Figure 1 (cartoon, one colour):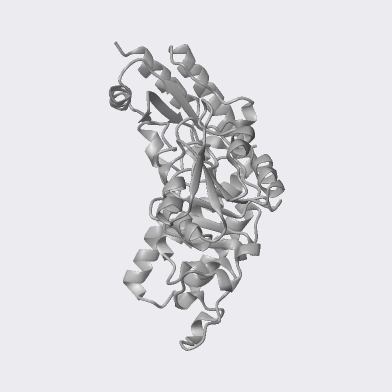
Figure 2 (cartoon, rainbow, N blue to C red; figure 1 turned 45 degrees about the horizontal axis):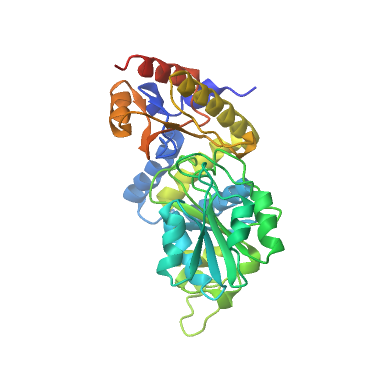
Length: 372
């Protein structure tokens, strides 16, 4: 039986507040923060002595990330963040046709395609922020080559059915690029079916590994060395041969990393992934969805309008509540009462992760009940 209280205790930030804002940025666990500190302490104490050990640990973390995604470790690259990753993908796919986007998606999903010079078309979302397959199909043209979406809508919590979306794209010979930042670590993401061509995620939300770091999955079918649009010394098939007058680039995703790994960030991610593995993706998703359903009820009982995606399997850890008062003021008043949420649009966005529990929801209920 999962000891949720013990896992919660690994996150000190939860001791002083009802932290219902993972969708903005998660607290780090003791283990993840310690892993980063240990790298800096070792580098301060010993310099570069541990280089080989650090590289081995990087590959171990890469393997854990691949396991989380049900992918191959050769398909995983470490990147600065999701925005940098989608920009790299957009540059790589310049010749693959027009890009179908969804209006109202997070800007990191849409801007890179526009700035890279792709012709784009926007599908219209429904009230939950995502586009139905019918809405996507309505704007597909013979020139369309790529679909790019956020797996989970950053404001409403709507989640695409990745299998159905992938099948939609395969049937139409469209590439599928997914930003999983608002889902990976909270809901299961299985790439073993081959439906997704590229997937990116920042690490500071549901992966709980802090800022300035992320993951890029690139399907092996897109890792031909002829498609590289940039290279660094670690892009070589054998980086340590240091051959400078011939191109012999790796056909693994690590070729996209170009230079030295950000060791502290990767080791922090490794500790975060270890905790996710101990608990298990299925158990985490089940708990996240149960808590978010309970959160929805608390908000509805307090008089908020909570438009929930239907069916329930299109939901996530994010719950959006429309308010009749200024959402920024509401957010600030909740924070003053020890409840941390975000102001988004005409309401507040709340979010639950595996480390939340009923005490957080009760604190929210009492805070809302105490307001004038």
